[in-house]
Image (cartoon, rainbow, N blue to C red; front, side):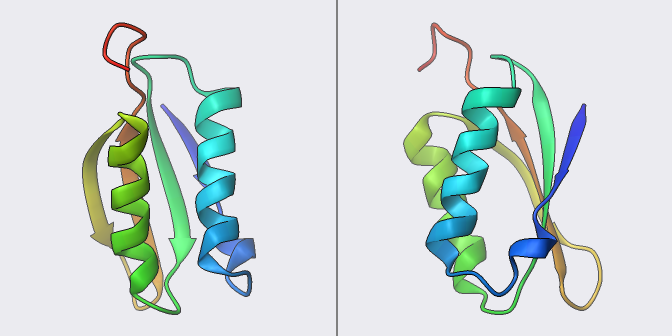
Length: 84
């Protein structure tokens, strides 16, 4: 399982964070592999938007949780080729 820290994008628009998550899933994650994304929540809209973006891609959001005052983790399973 890989972990990708996106907290450095906290001052970027949500669209940038979502695009980066998608790019990571496309470029660095094999079908069926589970990964963890970490990001800083400045605006809670990013939590809902990221869940929607993962669903739209056909990937599986396995867990979404806040682990301290500002940081959030998403556990995502990349869709198998036959699921997408």
